[in-house]
Length: 237
Image (cartoon, rainbow, N blue to C red; front, side, top):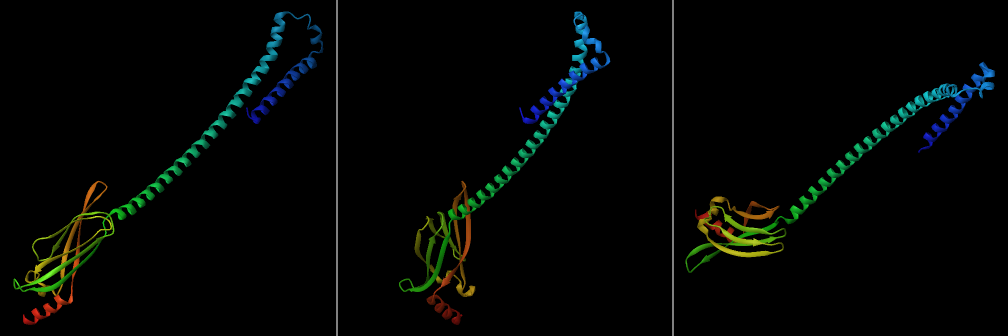
């Protein structure tokens, strides 16, 4: 029981005592001889007397109880509104927290995806040499690929204007591959490409239980031996 409710009960008791006193005072004021005949009163007279007094007090307590209950209901309604407002604020804070956690998770996942995706450092270089045994002008493609990211699978290299492909296979994080392959010079058509040759590198990797296929284009560098031979061919042509 809170302090305010205790105070209301004490005030009610005091008012009740004052009400009894006022009733008795009015009886004495308007009929001073009434108290002299108390002993002569019969039971039905006592019933009428007490009924009149306590009926007035009961009506007072009825009205007082209604007012107290109404006040308490108003306080409960106010408390429920405050609780509803606090609950709403809590829900908003929780929703904001969920959104922040979601953004943090997406950022973390993005960083993790970048970390786990392959990152290939590719160096492709042509060098020229002449095969005297078969009397062929050959260009040797030097392949140097290093993977500094997640595992790359099924790495393949296709050279523009050249049939076939060079299969590299898989490269795990930190692995490096060095390989060379020879191509007949005439098949490259370098003289018609302004000394430019390009290669298509294809590979795949696993991300979130799905296979991602990647295709990138890389320029193939020409060393001095190729450039010198190209100048000779172009001068003849």
